[in-house]
Length: 217
Image (cartoon, rainbow, N blue to C red; front, side, top):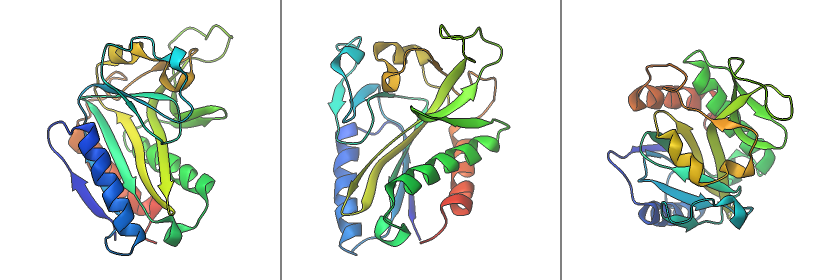
């Protein structure tokens, strides 16, 4: 059974990273239970292993943290629910692709509780919301906005880092980067989509859908 940890206020990024690395090592050694940690960070950018420096448009705006998780540049800040998943793939199946797909399904099922249809797109990491109310993209495609990012790292088949879902962040803060290296699409949030959803509402849905989608190893 995974421990659920919820932190109030804003959690320092380096402190969170230190906790995750320690907990992941303990899980791998059989000394601790799996852990799902829900928190918010102060405004910051993180660079994944595929980040391109030219995608950091405003390097002096917020602190930039290099991290060895997968993915490119991501923003974290107040109003965004960060979900760090320290889960044991030794027990859940050593299949990285299947694990990422399960995380995607978890986010989509959670959004579904609020009447939203999230989508996964080939070549675009994260979860997307179609925006038929918006003009077509420069490429003539349906406008879509990103509502959730996913980026994980594995050590001894234990995951850390995880998911971020936009509840009510300042969307202008994403302007300092090219989120996940994608320029033709925007970023949205639950409140931006007109949903009166708070962090507590999202947490309840995340917990319920985790049990249904991710299950117990």
